[in-house]
Length: 446
Image (cartoon, rainbow, N blue to C red; front, side, top):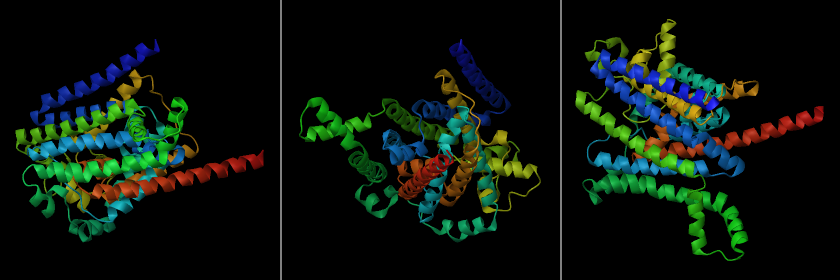
């Protein structure tokens, strides 16, 4: 009975999204642009929930209990996406644009890493866990929404953008002089962006994880099973393969996320070519929704998987409805606009992620309303605020500043990754201390 009820609820969620898509298409053909974002969001949500795909759990599990399965899944997804991105870019079908390269990426990543472990989910993980009914993740999402909106509406953030970030170089390895001269034509994208920026560092990262967290346990189990004492080269390769296949579900999800991310880029580029507009803001202007766009006539429209900026726009929209001016700043007023929620393309991707996750959770019997209590309320809100602040400082989150940038050939993605790892480590150590302190206090009372 429960299985049937869950299936019906999943179909209802899908039906609502289909109905919304049809209504948009009926209203104006330009809204097919939004529909594409909706359904790629659904695809991400389905896969994230299926693979339990979360950057926070990746580093938390590694540092706290030595489990590396999620790190492997992330690397697989990133490598597959990087290959597809190189292929698309070589054929002039890419939408990727690198971010400013600087120390702010490490600092922002550090703050973000602390926040995501506190909240129990990264930016993408917060969305899919909200779709599962997790109340703590919903609180974290609210923290992300409003912390960003408040921060970017300050003069300090304007100074950060105009006086620092906008003066920094934006590069991909394929466009550097050395790579472009040594490997002219399409080859530079595969060598610079894919091989040097993604594959080689990923292999090194896999080796580090294998040597420090996986090898000892694997060799112990292998020697016990085979009753041999030697460690051979074949055994090492078997260990590396065992690491890659530690969770087949996560690895499969990683491959599919990489492919879907690439298809998303290809489809969005096709939409831009079809409508003769590189940004949805230009289509909104054609439809007469001038109030939605920035002073440049644009809205936030990344053209690929991205989280956090659209959430910041939700916060700005709420504050505007309360009477605050949220456009006298660079972030909203000049760059991203504050569109009505129902005309916000990237926001529909986030809604799609929640919907896709909800469907998969229902079908897997993993959907449950979990209301946060006590400390979880504090951790959820603080973690969300930390992620929001970190994302704005780094100009991106675990998806936009790490996953997407690395795959696209931007070395700054690794800077964010370094900060995110360090922040996660600090947060895990804090939780270990907090738990030990709490247990000691309870034992004293006992």
